[in-house]
Length: 330
Image 1 (cartoon, one colour):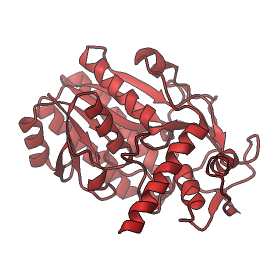
Image 2 (spheres, one colour; image 1 turned 60 degrees about the vertical axis):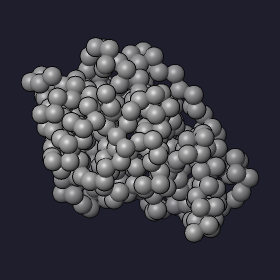
Image 3 (spheres, one colour; image 1 turned 135 degrees about the vertical axis):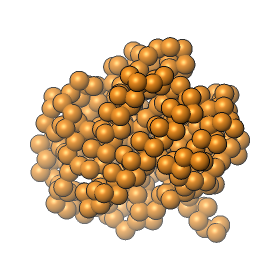
Image 4 (cartoon, one colour; image 1 turned 90 degrees about the vertical axis):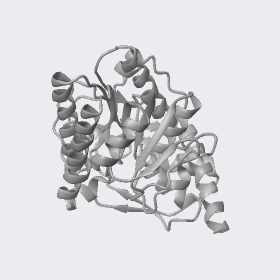
């Protein structure tokens, strides 16, 4: 049996591939390399370059590798971009996921793990957010993910496909062994931005909004280390394979850090200073987003290992240094 990881050459997907291989799983990857990197793939993984909506490719991969589970990361994730390009997000995230789910069903795949997001939750609900919080996406990105959640719910009633939906909060960090990390040029994730600034690869860090109703006026987010997130997926896979049933669970640490606190962590851990500029709020942003991840901890027996901002920052900065050396060599 093999696990198919879609988007396995991307940031989170490449960490998932390494985690599965470390655990002794057979892994096959489909990625179109639109945002991922072939060099980020573990050499032991079987790689197929292509689109997850390509039925001929997906069905062939499922059959040739006896795929029993799909972990689906492929998609687009930039919230402001989704506001300016909503149809692209509904195509890339929703329509292509629908096609992949259909191919999973027709190919006899039993387990499906979906990469969802905290962006599906309504703003202003009680924090920390649990899985029963009001769902009301404020952006096309969030809505494109919610629609896939609803499809999985309905498909699981009609077919022999069970699922785990993991709703991420803010993913950051890099593989502690230095094998992969966030490498996308022009990335908008705050921790990636501050690490680039600390290494002189970005002119400044822009802070969007200083008048939020938070402890220091800047937005607060629940940051989760990507390796802890990969572990949660693997535990979800084990749960499905053992007959544990469908699951929707938040993935976060239950506490947040403000933009200013993230910047100070980067300065503290790196020992470097960098420029910061303040700008107005962006459409779609929220003051504070924090997870209640009690369900993941209970149902998956998930125990995070890197749940401090300086731990996240240390691996992020180390990866940025690795990228700097890689770029210098080329």
